[in-house]
Length: 609
Ligand code: HGA
Image (cartoon, rainbow, N blue to C red; front, side, top):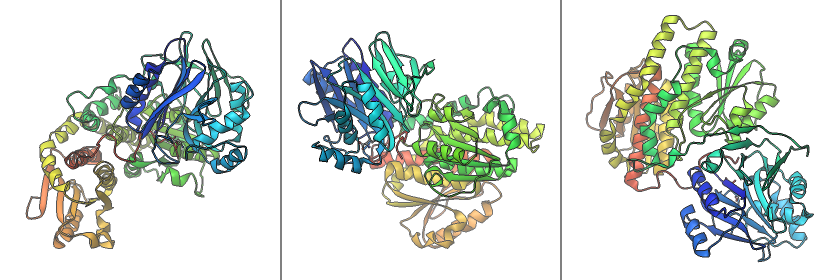
């Protein structure tokens, strides 16, 4: 989603702003822009194309400056058009005094807009952001830092903002509430950005702003106040942000690269796990795991499906009841809290707005024992939770999550075994057996990825369809959900997933010879039941595409296409089957010619509600 970069320096900062935006491109965006202080004036350039296009626009215009802000926008209010792209100016005329970029949603924008229109402000965009620019201009008292502190008190909703004023050429002021923002410290120059990666190569001295913070960036000085206006010291961390993600190597797309990285990153995520120990999740983990008698998992999208898989695992092995909730639902519904709950959040970025809000909601209800499974060690989610397990997927650029999901599953299986051990349900022998299987996962995933040529042959058929059904049972039901999600996200084929036993309760009505039905058929205790469900599909002419285990005793026949996974993997089988489904979605999208890494309307790091 939106990316922010800002700088105050004594050199031309356009290359830093553009490089920062490029590093934030992976989040997904629909337009972008830069504003600079140039010879006592505010100037800007905006584009509805890629950052590279903005870069050449800026080059042609020879736009250079020492102070400025830049933005990639993922539209929430107003179409992705250049007049809605940030930075927004106030007044909107040639003679702008204020330039501002924003990530988030201002909920009282209608009310503020009417008020500001009443004061004579003319709006050029349909965004909620423009009201902040005019509000800051209206309240401006010659001291931008003071003005922003007053102005943000009028905002309801979520924001990270960066703003500068014509009258104060060596100052950028930024603030955050509900959206991520960091400060980068340099020698006689300072920066602000959505994440540390945006500043990789410029500075590794990073301050993570906290909720309600407002920061004053000047050449040799960074000054922060909290939500009450009190000066605060925030810890400076040395952050070695990844810079290698930009290399595609031999792959055509980041998604393909990330699918093929899974053997390594799952191995990395489990590296150093020589035994099941609560301390893997944090110093206080044993005490907390002993105290809880239930688990509440909060997540969105793909992470939610990882949570549903974990429910099957935890209830089966650790015998602890688990509730999995979609974060955006949980945060607004009346639920029955229980203080003995372990609240587990799952998020790739650790900045997912709905999941962060759901976590805070759970805590406000008295559930203070919190753990996150997260891919970014420095994220808000990790800072907010008492316990954590950091997956080591590395930077995931493709909007459709792949390696983040499988590393989340690996971490959740570790959590399952730990809870089982703490509750006395894991013998030493079982522990050793599970660990052995986990260590073998990289090899087992690689063997599934080697099936790519067979899967590509199926993808050509899928590319001609407009609908697909995915069936799974037990621990593979959430994998069917994830397979359907992958297909719809990147190929735009309408796909739905069902627990196979539900077929006759409705979706069977959709089955014709035009309907491909992807079936996950591991050789487990539900296989015979699943075979009956497959017969129900065949009897209606449906075309079955079956991912079977090597020993499933399902053969190809008329209308039944079978790809065999090399080995049966017991409880960890979802991690293997999902890799096959990722490849199916990837190659189908490729055959349909969609923008695989940046599917329409979607964004990475969903930092708005
Ligand atoms: N609401 C603003 C910013 C959107 C955003 O943060 N996206 O990630 C807009 O629509 O421009």
